[in-house]
Image (cartoon, rainbow, N blue to C red; front, side):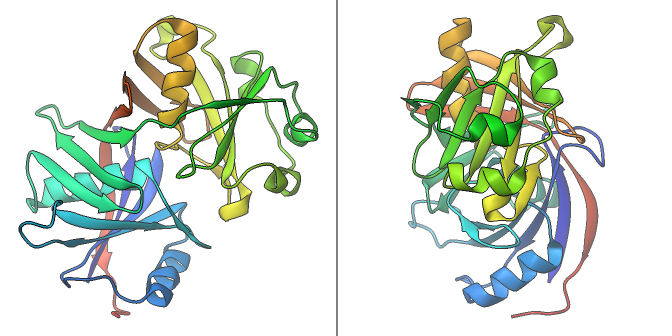
Length: 273
């Protein structure tokens, strides 16, 4: 069975967010124990598993995502990585429809090599800043917003880009403050550098202290920053050590996420189900 490692939301190797991708020949998924074992072996923030669906199924491929410790409802970078593998191997062209736990997602390939994902927009619910969040992050929090059930993140607004970049959170303390993770964000210090806002994502509750580039979080960051900046076409920089750019387009109940990807490893998985 072929297994690939793809760096997503970047145009160069060893940047962006790496994801494992396995395209399965079977008409259904292997049992969850095997899927979880593979994800732990790959040991990246997400490993994607996909298998083709028959005509009339309402989608082209079924898609699931696993962290090293759990299955998640939605993942942007591993979806981008899967679409990249489908395109570069010739397994699919044009627009691909995925059936996932969060509904039908699509990925459209463009002539310049980029891919656009069509995801549900995450509605935001303003909250009082929860006790302990600022202390766990080590920075003053200006506002806090809850996100949809499929994401389960807490979006927290910080003062500025340098504050986001300088964060050194207490990961154990962060676990108590959201279903999935904490997204810290602030406006770009200099929009002339090609991005409008910055973010960092911390997910210790699902086995990931810091995620390099979190595509799904941008379905919440898009409406958050569109309301503040007065534009629906924006670019976010996730300011992790690897960094990555996500272009977002807010379309009401849907958010388009555009980026590129690079395959860095193409090998054989010997432990078949």
